[in-house]
Length: 499
Image (cartoon, rainbow, N blue to C red; front, side, top):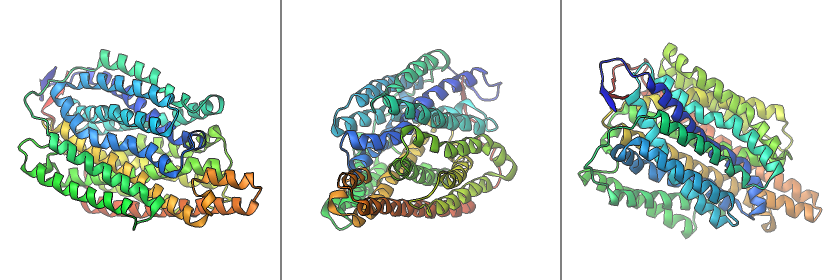
């Protein structure tokens, strides 16, 4: 159901976008609530720092590895069919995660959840360049990106209430009604795309990319537990780099590669993708450490922790709602640069957090951080997606989302390992499992000195995490000023529009 460019776009495209908004909300709920539930799960599933990192990383790892072939699947089989199948997988695996009774079962369920999300994300993004004109595209991208962020104000509040009244698995049950609504909306409003037949699936490329991502993530997560020199760390990291090099060589030789490496010859696509990856890297790190800080150090319960995330979320929504207008006035280069300046400044500010820091201080730097996210993410995503034609929209969107999400996975792994390393080096062996385990040991032994040591060690680790993230935001600022266009590019026209 497509139409050649040149005529009036079909008004049904906005109803189709509404369906995509519901799909995005379903994914957003899952990502938001997991971080809020981590402290409770650490206690009830007896999970240490490494397992908590895997709770986050396995989802984004499968998501990143699966999005590139998922873009191809959507192009070949039809994007509507792909979305409906993905939603079914997502709903069933949400139930499995909710009723998992061990860390291994939960990690497995999260992996399947990542597969469902992997089929959704590039399929949705691939529709944007083909459904909307260049003038409409920033608004469409902002709407889709902002919709996933609507899960941030709704998800933490609902999740905090559920965690205060029910078992931790209840926070995954709420995915199910969202999936049902999304299935109905996609079935009614989203037009089916024209399937593209005949392209072979690059099985070797899929295996090599998955092996490289898994090995690198495993090695990075284990740094916090074992240190850089341990063979369990070095082996997977070196092996992952070697396999990644083999993947690139294979993709250059294969006639129908999984990743069109030629996409990266376009500076706008490459830089936009790189900057979105930097943003995701910092975001995953911040969302990993903040709920733990609120509950372990500030003594908040689940609901109180969710309320303390609202300044970040509010700033993000304000930024998202104004990013398109800001980019139109001052240009994508300076809109993104402003966003990265806010990100860097807020992260360095947050790095001064102490054991006795109050709620007002935390609200101050997190609202600025959220505003920076809101300015930056739609701008850099539009820079990347705006470089795609309708012919390579599916694979290109898959590449962008895969690299960006892998950056989030590495962010959780690397920044989580930094936190774990600083914490473990500063506390005695009996308190090293996690900050919650350390506090439990201190309180069981009625040791005020050990409790203070545990709290200070965690805050020191949090500070280093935020300084590292701030340094990456400075790098993003430099790249944005050097490579992003100074004016809005309206030259790219989609070759077809779903009707």
